[in-house]
Amino acid sequence: MMIAVYATGASIRHELVKSNDGLACVLSEIAKAFSELSRLEVGMGDVGFVFYKVSALAVRTCRHRFVTDPADYFTANDIESLRQLDAILVTHEHYDHFDASSTVKMQEATGAIMLSNLGAYAPLKGRVPGDKLVLLEPDKTAEVKGAKITAIESVHPGKKPIMFIVEVDEVSFFHGSDSGYTSAIERYGGRAKVAFVPVGKPSPTASVRDAVKMVRALRCSSAVPIHGSDKEAADFRDTLQKELPDIQVIIPEPLKTYKL
Image (cartoon, rainbow, N blue to C red; front, top):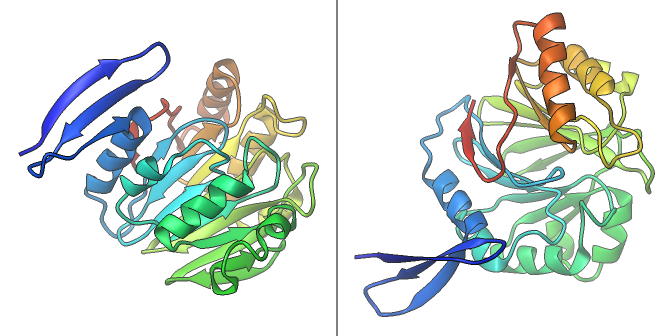
């Protein structure tokens, strides 16, 4: 039997969970959302996800679970709530996408494979086991536990920053980091069912117009705006409804579970 007691603080709501053995732990809103994602029924060809902020996501397919650009947003308890983590994907080394210490702790706790651009790879080398650390360079593909992950050159400051496409479990998704548009994306048209695209703030390169161009080039069936303001997300949705009305647009609420 599980007994839940809710405690609300000034900035975050927690859940105190007590098990039969009398031990208790406090679950954050993030952990609760990740736990819900872990219980979501996801079949072959489906993508489940939880968006937190910036470009940090937990993504679930039928047999795999991923975290993208986690920075220092998630605790060990949060990640444990996913019940499984196959890969940590980092697009570049900027603080709102990557934190070396947090990433090392996450990898140690889960045994996940860590894949990143050159800028994030360098501070992890020697701190993450060599067989668990993968350098992703533009136009290169890595296979991890049956998932094919392809890096695409990003238009953004950094040391070889990347975007990526993950193909696994009869489905695929694109993550655009906080990049501007590049014609390199056109080579991957038709390879992503779901596109997580950056729409603006605080990135100096991402914009609504470039996000629309990404979606058009990818020929995806669903698009999810990330890394931007509420207004930019709404502008993106409105623009797609006019220019590409057949594409489903979901403006994600933080820590809400979705399935596509």
